[in-house]
Amino acid sequence: MEMLKIRKEEKQDYKEVENLIREAFWNVYVPGCSEHYVAHELRTHEDFVPELDLIAELDGRIVANVMYTIARLTDESGEEKKVLTFGPLSVLPEYQRKGIGKQLLEASFEIAEKMGYDVIVIMGDPNNYVARGFKSCKRFSVCLEGGIFPTGMMVKELKPGVLDGRTWYYRESPAFEIDMDKIEEFDQMFEPKEKKVQPSQEAFYIISNSTLN
Image 1: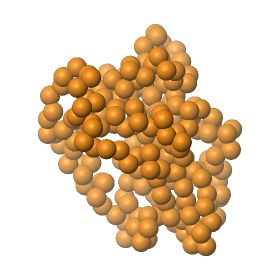
Image 2: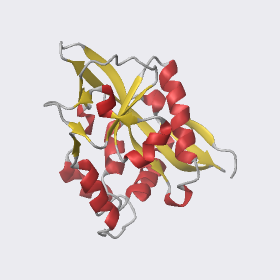
Image 3: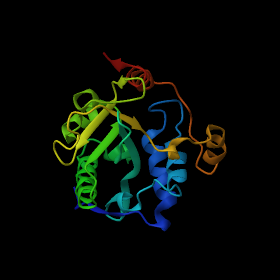
Image 4: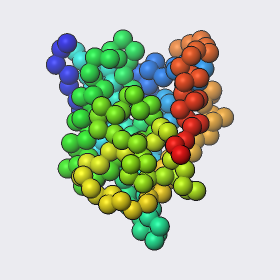
């Protein structure tokens, strides 16, 4: 593989990155996808972290991207802590399982730590992230309101021990509260693709609707 170049996304990259995201997520979690529209909307939100808006290039072609947003943890006394979450994390299908996503994430972790962030919380498939140092949210007493521990919610401490055993309630940024009715209109700007039902969508449904006891 050619040397991977990791850099910040620039304005002229937006359309190419949105198309990359669409290719990476199309029919994976639902028929079609919404992640490219989410990315389009995230860039203008106050919780978006532009320093962690990164792309990976091979031979001048953008093959992967990751975007970060500020999220919040609140303990039982009401103390709030700003943390990070990432998504979308995308790799073009033909470049997946080649270590590109790993390199992109590791680079982002280094930048995040230098910026003073010490915790990342994500929702996803554990099979994709435990090798990157993420662990079940329950191990850190990080939950949703009501004491719910989603199976797919994972935590990575960039500074070990920073969560100190307290119970923390996770709240993602309102940046992800997108208008679902606008996705179809936005998608018309891209080359037509067929929406299909496939097994990965059921796997996603199971993970995203299950919790730990």
